[in-house]
Length: 393
Image 1 (spheres, helix red, strand yellow):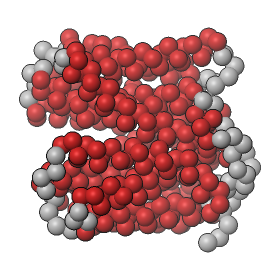
Image 2 (image 1 turned 60 degrees about the vertical axis):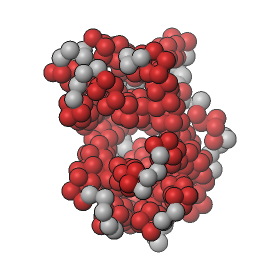
Image 3 (image 1 turned 180 degrees about the vertical axis):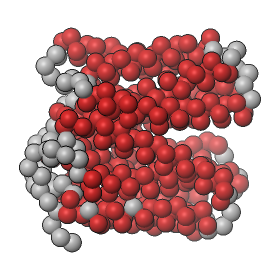
């Protein structure tokens, strides 16, 4: 493999080969994950596995992400960004097919670790590649494009599942093929990939607190996304909506996610400091979650609020990532990007637990109160950083 180009500072224009490679790669993985998550759950249920054990097996995704995040930067420094990504593609594709052949339930735990660990590596390095090569004045636009295409990829996964079903090798083969397709743009643009000449200057966990406005934003996003998506159908049906109406409301949130990321990215490019925008998004998220109990009488009104609310919630990830890229470069950016994904993974584990417990303790509307609590914590943190650390992260 030829030696990738070393970037000295940021390019003045968008590096399209790099952008297409990173976005195409991660979108293919998004399709495979969107297909795989419902597929695996349905198959386990058909095998008679209890809901508790299915949930435990699914939670391995977050565990794998937390384990892989600290290792990714070290691997990229030693073997190169593009080469590490190519190996991650191979491992995730092989493990995706492995689920079909693993007849014993215990085998699915190490397979989950390998699959989600490899895809976490792809996420971290794709985002680092995009952030490292994006021109500062257009970073928000570039990351908005990334988030939009990724959302489309995740949406296509369940659509494929509805067509392919859960029988036989075909759905697993299609998922593995989608992942392997990611290798093509990575290989073509391998000489455009950034090089990590130096190791990060600090221990991995210190990067979690280096840009806290960004890492806390993605923690809240992970908690609300994972908890909201998994428990919203239960909440919606309990308050009187049908299953079809609940599913459509989730779709509306997904549409908001796709539609708002590029406009939010463009807006962030006009700001010298993205922290006020992150605070505003969290305030909208807080207000939106607090209004949910009063919207249960009207599906249309609930859908309208969730359309904007979903876009603003997802904006925490996009703008948080953009804020991270504006503060750091090189090996520090790669390590901070890994810490960013680590915090997201922690959120995806903590969110469903906290929201589910709140529903058990305080009733159905505990769903809204728990989500509001996550946003309120971030509002306090982000506004506090603006007032007490005005020149820092």
